[in-house]
Image (cartoon, rainbow, N blue to C red; front, side, top):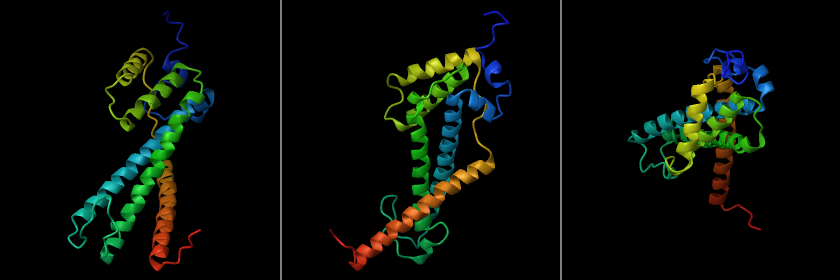
Length: 205
């Protein structure tokens, strides 16, 4: 390739600062980059919430006052200390919030076939999302996952990598808070439903 023919390389398409996020202007040029940026944000929020959930789970499991607690059986917890910070309810909220964030990331992945990339950067962005799905499948070593990863590595070796897609700390907080609020509402609704069933005042049609 001649030196003057650099219109397909990533430095030309998205700039040379690999650790800078994809700017709105670049996202406007290629909708695949915009989708990738949204997917990255949702995926990162799910990882943050996963760490919160794991920390709360660890606190609960080592609390001797909370008996008979497992990840799938939280209903036997009666000690009111389990309802405070780090307790059963907050753990349930964190778990549901992570599910909301992961669901959002999966929705972005589902849009990949509907979005047309208009640059090599956009193609790499789409492949990043496809390869990123391997954590949600049974065996990422099966065909075609290693083959797609190989294509992605080849493209990156030729054109370069995408810049850091991680959002600002403020945007991440906003994303996490959004999912947390939805989870709080869901857990409250489930608790109310359970209480109603316990009282026997649920109307059966």
